[in-house]
Length: 315
View 1 (tube, rainbow, N blue to C red):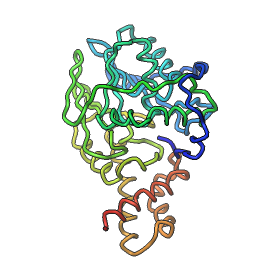
View 2 (view 1 turned 180 degrees about the vertical axis):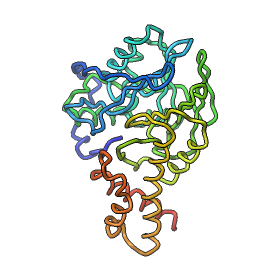
View 3 (view 1 turned 90 degrees about the horizontal axis):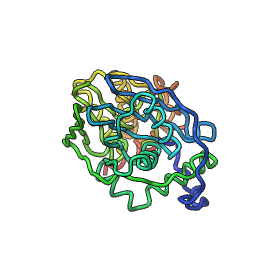
View 4 (view 1 turned 90 degrees about the vertical axis):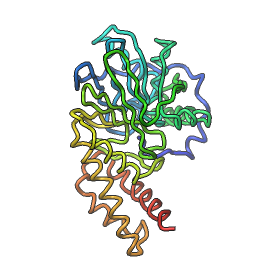
């Protein structure tokens, strides 16, 4: 997710739904992480002109009834690239698209999939679907245009229309997709997607590996709870929203970061410190993650979010 929303700047940017389509982005290698499962691990830096806005981990699962794409990226250009990489491995039709949450760097690539497969069903949590009526897509399109100097132009919001909530199960061919949503976490619309036959979990941005992300659209305590739940699942492969695929150890590592952040803020708040006063202590408590991408940019904002949650819980 992005380091900042840049709202003042966004107010100066006009709607871009009619902008000419910007050039294609370079191909990025897809890595096989399980039987029939491929991930394109995106760049770790924030969207910019060089990476053309690509930053997440688009993935697909091959089933006997077609391909299921998870989070096809931040623009129509990224979605087009995902389809090119997918077609290098399979000619099977696209059976469905699953979006893990509302942040546009994960789902604006839906457009490319829908252009190629006009009838493809696109699923997400009901809270994400509801936010589309509030201008969610247009906000993200304007933001991506600004951050990339127009490299995502031509993207229009093609959102999910089919809801998935906690406990739902979709069977597509020989694969089962179990949906987990344990309340507010990274956002209020996160789903984690388990493929039990493969002992695999798509964590979305509930699971991050090797970088810090913004936390201001969700709840840190809820994020910890969702990660605790993920650790109860029988998993061999975990695909994070950002960073390299691993196993359950990457769930534990990110949970440890959130717990170190939250518990330190709880302790110092009880001692009467303000968020400004506790920053050095929080940075020290989280030093284990100081080499993660975005640490210097995000640690202060993550601290502020934790402080606001702790403060609200005290009243």
